[in-house]
Amino acid sequence: MRIRAITLGIRLDPVTVVEDVAAAGTFLGEAAAAFRAAGLPVDTLRLTTQPIAAAVPTPAAIAPLAEQLVTTARQAGIDYVALGPAQCARPDAELGWIAALAEVIPRFPTLFASVQIGQAGAGVSVAAAWASARAIRQIAAATPAGFGNLQFAVQACLPLGGPFFPTGYHDGGPPRFALALEAADLAVEAFAAPDLAAGREALQHALSAVGKRLVAVATALASRGPHFGGIDLTLAPFPEVTRSIAAALERLGVPFGGAGTLAAVAFLADTLRQVDLPRCGFSGVMLPLLEDAVLAQRHAEGRFTLETLLLSAAVCGVGLDTIPLPGDVSEAQIAALLLDLAALAVVLAKPLTARLLPVPGLKAGEHTHFDFPYFANSTPAQVRGEGLAGLLGRAPWLALRARQAAD
View (cartoon, rainbow, N blue to C red):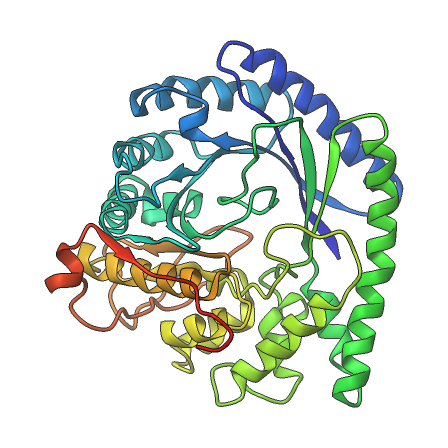
């Protein structure tokens, strides 16, 4: 188990950005030292802000702020920064925010951002899905192998305060920090148990034990600094078999992608929900295709599709994360996929995200060639159908209500 990120959320003021980020860097450095002294490894230090429209007055103001933020964060020892989301989940949303982010992201490899296109109790912005699809294709064309889309996500119904990027964001109040875990290895080890009950108990015991250590350090830090917002109990993987969520799920008896996969994901999600720790963010099951060695292998073997991942998201997954797509995937196909994901999030009133990586020149059946320590290479996923069109494609807004228990 490692701490993937200590993420601090602050209210970003363009007038005092240098002082505010410097103070954030000081706290994050002290926090990392405290966790490491307690024998808890820390990978990255991250900073996130309130929604972008609450930080700058117009989309044109994003670029100068981003440059100052990235430069100041680097000087302060902060590894990555995320602008709070462009909140476009309403019929009258200003879509210029999305276009501005598509211009800025390729310029700054340590800058992350997201777009909210769906909101529980309201619906999904079809117009924002189209604009986000354009942004994804633009970022892919502007960065080597389309890698810039690692920094960009589309989301729906996401709560504030989560530590994972690109979608974590702050409420604009007093500073607050949270922890993102890289802990798939705990599930791999626990599910070597002789039966389901023992596996559940072993994982809950392991998480509770390490969680108490994390909370003790975090509480001490919060007593003299920013508020502690909790732990995201999503067990992020690393591209090794011993740190693979898919490997843990397969220890339950089902090769990933086969019948029974949904039940295995639901079992893991239910196990996590019963762990008594202060939590935040998704605290669910993360299935990032390129970040998980077994997922990447199973996809290359043709064992599952995008629909498998969407189905898993319905029982508490994170969504469609680090999904490679063919270079010729159309804007209409991407928009349709984003609309499906957002509709699922809104109807189920649960947070879901999409991080899609079209790879220019990559064709169906070929392999990706990313040189990135957090990625295992695989084949591109196929988006079925011609994409968004007709009445649905021309509508600016899709009104949806959350499903009720009796529905």
